[in-house]
Amino acid sequence: MPKQFAVIGNPIEQSRSPELHQAFAQDLGINLQYDKRLAALDGFEQSIEDFFKQGGQGLNVTVPFKEQAFALCGHLTERAKIAKAVNTLWMENGVLHGDNTDGQGLVNAIAALGWSLENSRILILGAGGATRGVIFPLAQAGAQYIQIANRTLSRAQQLVEDLKAAVGKTQLHATALDQLHGEFDLVINATSASLTGEALQLPETLKFDHAYEMAYGKASSFLDQAHQRGVSSSDGYGMLVGQAIEAFEIWHMVRPDLKKFL
Image (cartoon, rainbow, N blue to C red):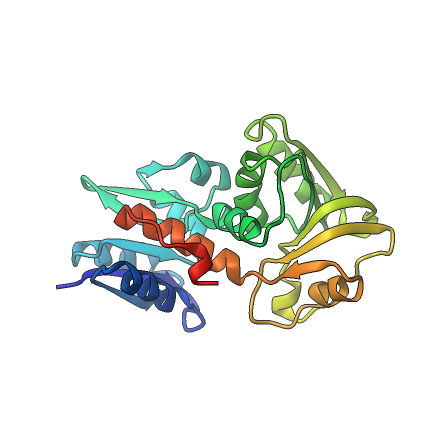
């Protein structure tokens, strides 16, 4: 009988996690069943409990439950503690374990594009949970300077305050979204602009070599502007594959080859 895995969220129909995990499993000769689970907004904890009671092996968590998943875990990895959000769950000796593989997924996707993070200057647009989840892995990968730009400056400042002790020598800086300027190796869009269809206007005073859009499968004014500037760019599909590979390795102790699935 195949081992049971799933992704849980609300909404959930859009998730591509089942096709990715099934493709990894087929490639590596692993027998698994991976489903989508819709949890009621007030029923997440019960859904988790039921899944593991019924013999489930591992769960991926998507919006809006990553913070709730974090709160439920008896054991957390270092990167999950820093992100204050969990997207990968498993049970060990009756204790719920949690990790956040989003940031490492991003780092691996950027490496697969051939863009170097060593001694890099990075600008991240947005100061929400997505940004919180990627700063520590980017710092570990060698980023020298990370600037967080947000519409509400105080939120970016709070994020810098929360994370500066975790990132070692990497310098963190907060700025308002309407005060953007300077030169960066990489700009990452972690705002919801491409999901809401909102236009994101990058000023001419902002110079950058690479552009990464965390969302995927959507029109993006951010990527449009990168194309107009002749800047190398990518949407977030590689990050999606990268975070799935990290979760797959945690559960199965074997690592799919990222480049095979991009």
